[in-house]
Length: 214
Ligand SMILES: Cc1cc2nc3c(=O)[nH]c(=O)nc-3n(C[C@H](O)[C@H](O)[C@H](O)COP(=O)(O)OP(=O)(O)OC[C@H]3O[C@@H](n4cnc5c(N)ncnc54)[C@H](O)[C@@H]3O)c2cc1C
Image (cartoon, rainbow, N blue to C red; front, side, top):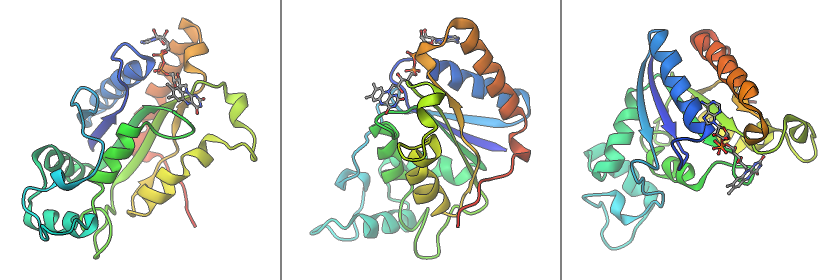
């Protein structure tokens, strides 16, 4: 598979950085082709706005979805955005690697979705990302036990806006997330075990059944 790895952590020596390296190592070893979008290293512009387009359909009033559809049709996205749209268009599997921040994804990654999952390309007007798979790999600060309550919320609850609101909405197949709970509290041996577990999970990724949304 062609894999697009979208990585959102500001520190290369972080555990997220180690998980990103593990993804590249495992998927390359098992015959997949990985393209890395390292958002902080790229100095990714998170806020969607008028600079997303090199040629506007309407220069008077900015209607983001209209301009996104126009830019996709006429290939007039700004260069940084055009590169990521092309990468997503070419991918069979997209992986988001990130730390859980405020029960959600980091803002830089949300901005990636706002800009790259563009109207007319990813959804709307008969568009979809159908046939592509999507996977979230993440770390949490809290231990697994703090994500077991149905009232406070499990990781699946917290990922619902991305899983259901973005991936499933764009008709992608959503794979079960890989979660490294309490990453900063683990000792070195436990962290190594997480990377081994991740290697095993990713080795089977082509055959992993997707989640169902109704
Ligand atoms: C704004 C903000 C909001 C947050 N909100 C939440 C929240 O809502 N819920 C929650 O649970 N947590 C939350 N957190 C905590 C956050 O999720 C954790 O700090 C994060 O997931 C830990 O991952 P990391 O990669 O940043 O860890 P790091 O602290 O970078 O890494 C942990 C340890 O792993 C070590 N390491 C690096 N590479 C390797 C390797 N190859 N092998 C072994 N060890 C290695 C590092 O040296 C470090 O000691 C929040 C944090 C912030 C900043």
